[in-house]
View 1 (tube, each protein chain N blue to C red):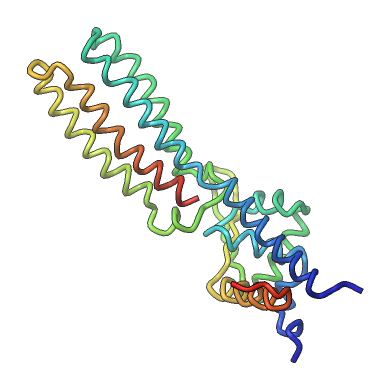
View 2: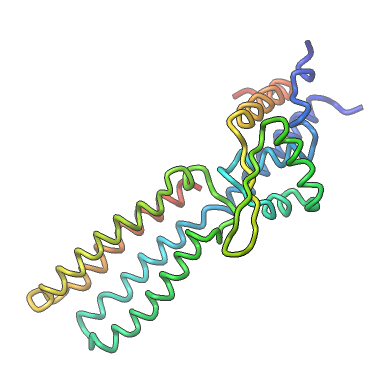
Length: 143
Length: 98
């Protein structure tokens, strides 16, 4: 005969293990945010030092691929798991909309002032990357 | 009444318990994800999900990703409440505090 106490303890352990397995498999969002943060830090500063036309092609291609992958991941159900916090308000959508406006403003400013400020695009890279790292950290914590 | 009699029979069945525990950890899970996690067949999951749905504990949503049909499962508020109550009873039986 099964001991009810040990049976209950085993079920509680199973519930915990199952929940942990779901959380481990879910919430990869933070990787997308971190990837964009790193991309910004790697791709924008060179505009201050190298030929913008050639480097611009590299940046355009990689950003196009990255954007496509990001949209696929976030929008079209590439994820099998929707974590509660991620799903309720679609925070990722709000983040990318606000971040897009923020980043565009910095790009416009850098385009105007890059002759006056020698590290204008490095600044843009940092300004764009910081929100990504913050969102990535928040997303990582929310797993 | 003994504590065991307070356990929810719908949730207590082992496969349904695992399904419910998985759904409790997320807002929504895709059918195939739950199937692989719980390690059961499509038909077994479909059958147990239907039982949970009939009890009002699970919501089954059908949709498409591109052109592919997909099914998502989620716990209803009643499902969350029932599962939380079920765990509380199990903790009492196991003598676990907190």
